[in-house]
Amino acid sequence: VQLQASGGGLVQSGGSLSLSCAVPGHAISTYNMGWFRQTPAKTREFVAAISWRDVNQYYQTSVKGRFSISRDNAKNTVYLQMNSLKPEDTAVYYCAADVNAPLASVRQYDYEYWGRGTQVTVSS
Image (cartoon, rainbow, N blue to C red; front, top):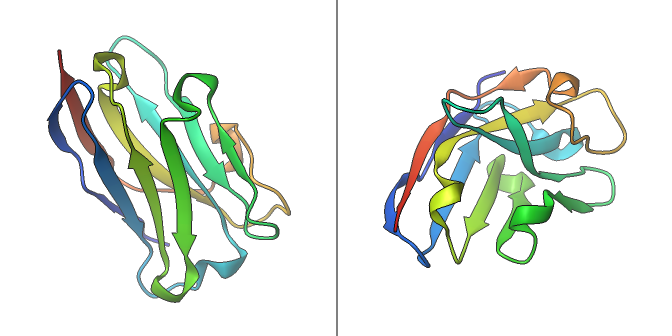
């Protein structure tokens, strides 16, 4: 299963970006999907996830109210809308798929498949 993340870039503090994660050739309707991020100084951390079963959404506390995860099963794509971006949101963002669980997880080790990542840089 290949995941293709896109949409990263450079934005000023307070700006917005929309990330996409396409999973070509696979029906993601029964996949839990997540977004994680990593900086050189930190380990990879959870950002947001969305369950396949009940479409419940989960967020890291620091992004709650600013980021929104959604999915379009018909397009096999998951999105991460990021608003009110801050310099501390700067990181490489990864999308991931968990195909074996009823509900989405916040733990990276529960995700079997990963995209390559897309760089998000927020300038102050």
